[in-house]
Image (cartoon, rainbow, N blue to C red):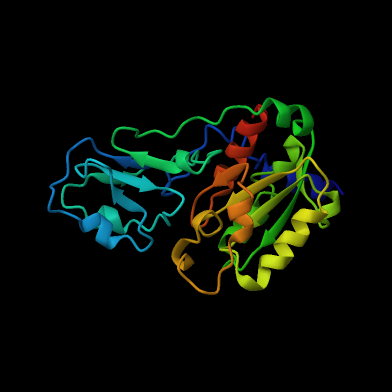
Length: 253
């Protein structure tokens, strides 16, 4: 017993103390688009993007980058001859609306997530979530699973994952939503008691990602149900999920 205690003391505190202040080294997250005007004849970044996340704005002289489609591959960084696109390691890129995920040269920063007073009153002290992988590659699923480990420890904020949708306050959806999973997702959602929230985790869940044009998808559920929270990334980082849900519920870190 004493030996076990000695081992635990030697391990020290492994939980991240302030998830909002943490920016993991080497992580590619929030995009930074330089203010320089691109040449009208240049489309190198757009051509390099595998998901058409980069498009010209209405004036065609500037760019906009949709984090809901971006897989953070970094191909655009390498392709841009002027170096106008970079990625920071700030993981706070969640949003409560689809349009809020679009970054432009005129709007380089994402809008901060406003506290939802009604959700805070209902779920601010306890939130139970059911995660469903709707045809994902297991990348986002592994990151969601990491939320319960000793480093991130999402449970310290009263937020946990449960096995049954009947015990859940919300659905965490990963994957592009394939036809084979469409009915299962709908049944899971229908089994949850009201009120409930929907969290779309990862580029695939938000837009279909690299599979957006695949005939194997059936995304009618997401066309009918707008997510409460969008958590972009490929895969989505646990800190992106944590900061998003904590900001939404107004929970201090």
